[in-house]
Amino acid sequence: MKKTFRIVSVLEGVSYLLLLFIATPIKYTLGIDTYVKMLGMPHGILFIGYVILALMLKSELEWKSKTTLIVLLASVIPFGTFYIDKKYLRD
Image (cartoon, rainbow, N blue to C red; front, side, top):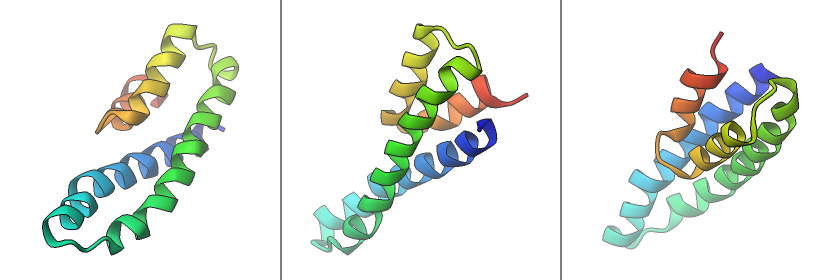
């Protein structure tokens, strides 16, 4: 399950960065919302998967509540999921 969470974590982080730094600026500078529509749903699914897997891993990895909160908050901070992968998930 940890390996699956690492994969979802990286994909969620990449999709968030693409949405935040490429799709959204294109939408508001050029008026083209195609990229937001194209990336929005996959990012939402990955975000939900990230949260569910993080909560499932809490007991498996014996995370304290503070660690779990940090892992969950990292999903809404740009580059946060990459930090979590490096700090909490790598062996």
